[in-house]
Length: 463
Image (tube, rainbow, N blue to C red):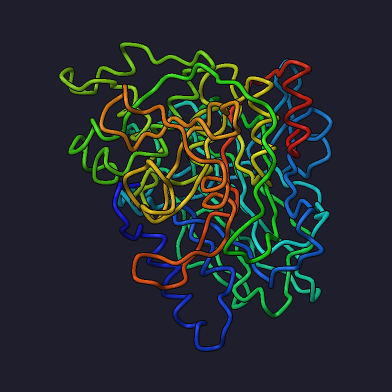
């Protein structure tokens, strides 16, 4: 995001819904759920729920998981990293890419999950996935849920994704204008339109459609498919957590600001590249590296070409930005031995648990300049990498909205930082009530975590 308080495209979409609801005294969840501007939750704040975890992340990752799904032409595969692939295709379909105008035929196969009943009915759901899509292949991820009134949603498209963007690939994209009058899709987020009515999503299924060029034997492979459901209470402030673990991880430091004006076709250049810049930092922390061949397309005069690469390969051609949350997690998982998820956390204590196990996190927050001492800017949506905590409990963050790489490491006050990250409502520079991020984060970690890492992930609800 940019370093000034200006609306993102998703923030503008959310504002339109919010404006329609203000007269009635309620801001629907959809108005808070513009991802990248901050995803909020619906319903009034309930003090009795303050200590609860109103979030559940669930995923299918094991060979047994894949065998439990319903297949049409897809086939589960075992091995060190179990997944699902195209077996004997179920048929052929035409797809017209809205971003190139090209119509092509594709063989396809589907895998549909069993119904998953949420442990807490949700106002929002964000799907994420990890997959390998060789050139000439792609995947579509859909969600179909059941509401608390017993009715069902349609099959919503949560993303059409390919790792590459070559001549044989589609352009990765979210899908706009999906709604049934009760819920809507905001780029990458399912959201109940008016959470004040009490309507919630109580269960869902996910459907994968795997595509490849007809007559080939190439196939996408999906290793992880999951979704985070949440019902975070509306709140302008959150209680500060007590400091716990102190320590700092050695995460590479990259500035988005040194890329201003570079490759403006990808979300107006580096000024808006907080998400891919943060993703690249953690990818490299875990040892992910790009080859000279992969980076050959970047102007050799540009520093840190891997940041340009991350922006290009997280870019959502419909959203017209690099801040699609699941696309960033999927990008991280294209590096060997890594996986990524999108979830919500409940406090800085959760982040301390992860840091103590060697797992940094990317967090989404929005704030006015005066709300975060030392930032020097305000933003309607910004991603940072949390790498540690001081002895006093303050947050050590790699903030890509810095003038150069040396300035990326920042220390932010615990109370301020925790509040701007976890709240679901805030006042913008014009004094209007807008959304907050509600604890959203990306977690990237090894495909085979150590016992300590596995325990820390489980403690924050990721398995």
